[in-house]
Amino acid sequence: MQSRERELLDFIYGRKAGGSIVQRLDRLMAAAFASLSPPRSSPGGHEALPLTQGDAFLITYGDQLKEPGVPPLRTLSGFVGRYLAGSLSGVHILPFFPSTSDDGFSVSDYASVDAALGGWGDIEAIAGTTRLMADLVLNHCSASHPWFAGYLAGDRRYRDYFISVPPTADLSAVVRPRALPLLTTFAGAGGPRRIWTTFSADQVDLNYANPEVLLEMVRILFSYVRHGVQVVRLDAVAYVWKEIGHPCIHHPKTHAVVKLLRALLGRYAPWVVLVTETNVPHEENLSYFGDGSDEAQMVYQFALPPLVLDAFLREDAGHLRQWAESLPPTAESRTYFNFLASHDGVGLLPARGILTEGELAGLIESVRERGGLVSYKATPDGEVPYELNVSYRDAVAEPGLEPERRARKFLASQAVLLSLAGVPGIYVHSLIGSGNWREGVERTGHARSINREKLAYAQLAAEFERPGSLRNLIFEGFSRMLRARRRPAFHPGGAQVVLPAERAIFALERTASDGSDRVLCAVNTSGRSVKLAVEGNFTVDLLGGGAFDALRAPGPRQVSLAPWQAVWLARESDRQG
Image (tube, rainbow, N blue to C red; front, side, top):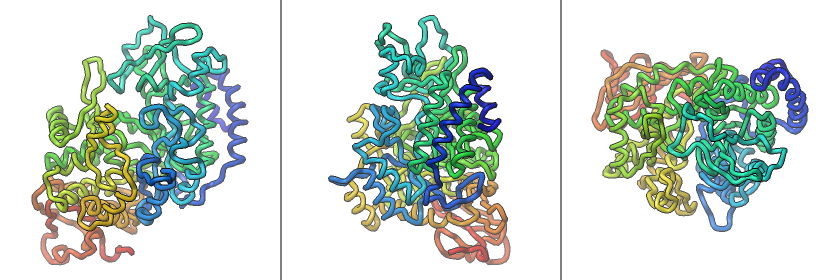
């Protein structure tokens, strides 16, 4: 074991305990390394960041699309091969393990694939043709997990796997992500136990103060890598370390755990990328880059969804511009995972301090008017709005618009996502143009179900292939943009400069790391025509395929952007493909 790993274990558990853990971790990694090899689908890239401008991910559940008599993972593989080849390079399959609640995030068996979805062979088949992202749900497991059953039964092996809190403990400092009780009482062999449950009564928090838990998670992590996972998403990682009297979010030992996992992956599986999922205010989220080379290679841009939505609702990209200007630059070892929609809702906490209280209230009101819902979390000052539960399509592009204009407006918002430095993640319901699924909310009683509808594959394919349908317009628009961005200027480690523009325009310039390719990206967030001043020899629109004569003429160089129009302007000499 290298000195860096030893140093981290000493910090987490103390020098005396750290020494014995090092020996066990050495043996564990020797066994894991013997069975690891880079997957066939890995295209390489920079050594410190094995990602390229060709990388973009579909975010989906394993059973999002269904066919009679066919394992859903096999249907998903067919969908990816038929529709996404040449546009999306990877798939983030949300937890595909046996689970008891929260659509997969209450894992009851980390070692198996949910039989209702398929098996490890289906997972490996997908990993053999595309980059596979998977979740390591490391903060908690299901209350039905055998570890917890053993704990409640008094099995000494699991004695310290979970956190039992005495009645006298002062938990007032603990940060709460949801408006639910922090503790849940369970009947155990020695009597009732008050167990730490950050997210729900069915999600019992694991106790990382017990090194056995950390070793279990390292073993699980490398088993996923052995099955072909190339990107690992650390779910809810900010809450991992618990300490009475501490807020129990972003604990220094949580960061140390992330650093340890990064160090182990860097040594034994350098083709694997680590992503932290921390739905927290912007500056806190960025802390998971560590020093830029020792924690996550990618962090989620949780501020992006509410800021883009705000720009389109108010037809003012000012806050979005200022936020983008403040971003630390990407580098050889780190970049951003950019997204606008996911299986969860649009988080509001990351936008606090960027949007005013009045602007946040405007988002909430607009989402409710468009059929969405609002979720709340507990704070010392009472419950506050935490998340907007809504289809991003319906949030941005109101139902009253006719299909072509509605698709144009929605796709303009997605052009912002695809323009920014980083790697884009596109939620399946955005890619296929789905709206609010209120029936799902009524069925489950959960607000997040509004954006989690499961679809019949045959019906979806028929809608895709019907010219002029909303799904067809949105999917074709996405495909066109995804193909256009596969050029050096969009490399996730490349540079970006946010450009000044009139209030409705979000504009930036992307540049390849070697300067060989430049693209000016501009989006009109308003329903009116606006003028964009252009500096530089940009004449070709990659999205429209044509040249702008106005940019060839003498005099002031500017281009007119129609309502909700996006343009990606390149120099003719740089034009590719």
